[in-house]
Image (cartoon, rainbow, N blue to C red; front, side, top):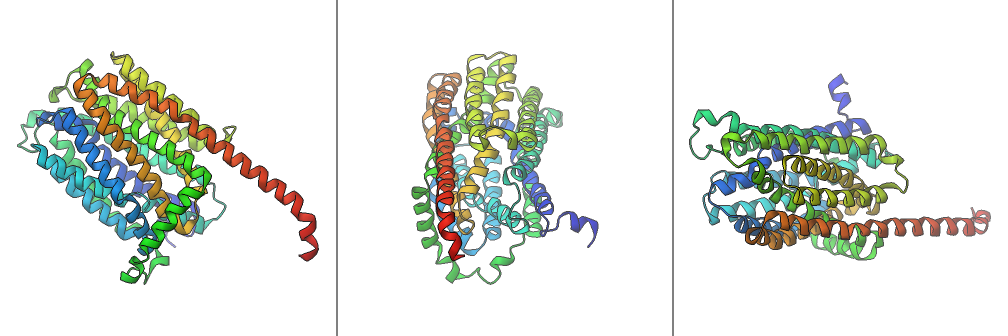
Length: 442
């Protein structure tokens, strides 16, 4: 086998991780190229924060409505076709956003973006975990997920820094509409989306779904959805994780929506001076990368395991949001963003590891979709309430409300830790009581 193919071999856990790290990293790069100036782009086109909040809420509602059915479909016919469909819908959504000029195109963006997001969750992540388990059933999941997170946050860092700086670097070229102003960053993201689509076709292999992608297999989606919803109710640890997931949605949409307007209060919002947003994008990307590296190197050594790491990270994230909201100077903006995105990284990986360890492999896509559903329910709640609040008062007040909610719900991970501890004790007691009687019968 050639050295390059050996490094990306699906029969080796390191090869599986390298393969998915490449794909996930480039996808994250495509996401983050336009993200540092996304809200500024909409504002430049005459859209206020209230309308932007409604659009984000519509996007989240679309995800909530389609999340579970698309996750069930991925378990029924395979994760690859669902992932490819997701990338097509996301590409179209960015085309609408590039030419946005009023409520109609903004809402069209939100609709297609929501469909793409619903198709995305529970697809490639489930494929990766299943391929990793097939290569080595005992592979340390949190450590491998941290490697993926490192690739994603490195790409996030590069994408945020480049995307935030592009409008300033190209401002002297007098680019025509729709590339003028902040639109050039969206065009760069669109070009990367085409590359990601091609790599998904080449790198994602699903031998277990050969011959199953037909109407008969798709008809089994409803039964898979019912089974997934039953598991979400019956698995005690999932109830706590779903509450934490909703809080994560409120927090991230608040950060994504309000950090740019808050930074704009300090640094201004002129496209010609957008370099400061590139610097801030680099800061938050670097903080996320450091957080992912910390989990990869030290995550397995945290006393109490992933539940404690995720709970502490959520508290730190809420405190960082308070710093960003209450200290609007340059130092407060930089420190708040850095701490917040460091904590986002150190929470996401253990949270995902807890979810994957709690669910059966044959229902992994649907359970990851349910986890994503409550996340986007949190996004919808945060967008629908905090966007209008920011528009009527101040984005700093809206971010403060989100910070308090983030800190208050961190206790969900205490419930996760207690449930896992009780389960381990019950298993230990059952083994110690049952072994002497079971031994004679073999």
